[in-house]
Image (cartoon, helix red, strand yellow):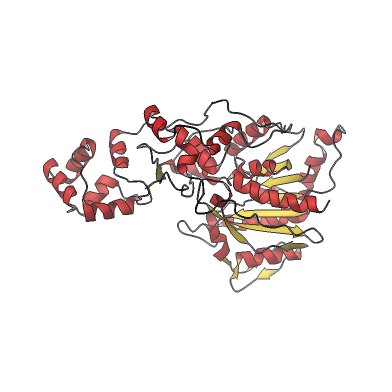
Length: 446
């Protein structure tokens, strides 16, 4: 079985796909304690036991080196006890350096120290010298420029070199060929979510050139939000009407896709973990009810202004507007019905959060994010549970996310709650599609 390493592994989305593709993960690493608990618990479920046949290291990649990794691998008991022959090389290293510094969502800072973690990734790759390398990042990486960037071999890149150009040249300098970087959409590979990520694939000089995975789905048959989570609707009567029988995707999620070390999969046996939902205040429920499927806050505002809206039955919203605006209920009802409202009135009834969106049940989800209140369920007036988000990412139902469900404020700088673990993950089925192509190149070379 080919051997792999997963760096910046997070809760384990990439690892799920790597294992599904047939790799044995010998070493994985991440800096956060919350994701460590989730990752190690999942791998114990799958039969990957710490110090026996795998090793998870929690720490900063800047303090990690190839000598340490090789020493850990060689001292795994499956090798020291003679159960398997000690590997002489690693077949593939996978990793997704933190992407916040490259993100197109919000302000980008070219001096963000997280931008330099991909250099540390290259350094570790150089020291491990695997046959194949995969790196995943956000699209913003493609148009990020560096000035005076010093590579792992000491070469300095002046005059605003683009990150992909630096990356490809750096791989060349350490003995690797590269494929042209490509942006892949997870929905093309069985993930019920529109999630575009740039993928870099490198292969050591002398190895067989791999390929990018070909899309499996297209605009006519992509999996939808309904396909993914229709069976998790809370209202039983509504669920029986909308999702009368399990879809193939729902069945696969329950049965499990990721094999254990013995080749079996873990059936959730009907247990839906991480499926608690928030108890929204009546005011919030009424606010969510204003959104039609596919609408974000900006579109709702435009519709109110152009068509008007009936809020006569929204007693909590009416009370909120009356108290904050000093306008009578009758006048509010009339003005919203005719669309004769101002920005202050819209801010009170909707808040200023224009990004909030009610997903469309008949389309793939928008990119899963780390904040639960960005999206509204198309079926009920509430946000999604952690499990529903995980389904949209293509995690098995048996995959349990540990730690706090959510957190806020300054704690978000150090804590990685369940919603964030899901939102930051590489979708397992996207990872599987990529890792399977690396596996094909390895087997072609046998």
